[in-house]
Length: 263
Image 1: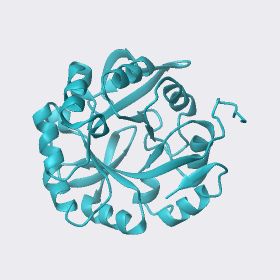
Image 2: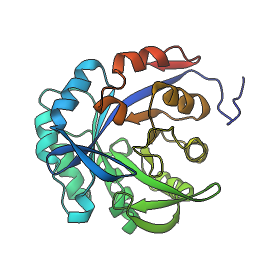
Image 3: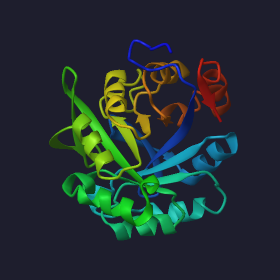
Image 4: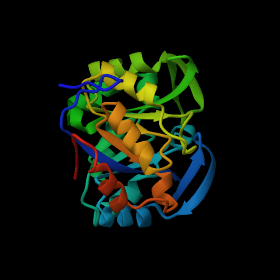
């Protein structure tokens, strides 16, 4: 069994390609390092297009939910669930088991929790116990503070926690999370590649799937993160929203990677 420079064993892996839709009120938006947001259109118009083109999953991220203490995604997800039949994750503003129940009732398959989980880690366990770990996604927003040190942030990358992001990932798994959505705030929206070291470090300390987010500017960046880390999925936004790459082209290129299965 061969091993890559980052310790990735050469086993056949199934990789999911996920469209990430950042939403502010009713608009799909895109920014750089989660700031400087630009309105792009109606979220479900993009979601429907990606579904028809063969995307594996969709993540709806309410990026101001924690700031305004509310979630505006449920009507959007309820509408989407009538004609989009792939797994959908709702993240942002999930502060309680009741919020999670409402999101799942609106048509979401999974809920992502960041801010509320950092403030009350028991929420991870409560949601996992109520709905199953497969429904509980721990969303981790990480910033590089020193060499090989990343800090977990919350409130859409605005607030420090003082918590080591790698240790927090381990804690999330311990408390019952079934998946981690790992966003590099430093790389998000920049398009110059993912934080391979961050992603590799998180993948090495958990046994649950890790979705890598932040930094994809072209298909080569996706090949890089898949080849050099043990990610289970890659979340993409910018290259889809701006039409830089098609889902068909992405999947065709990734199928050429040895040991990788793409749906």
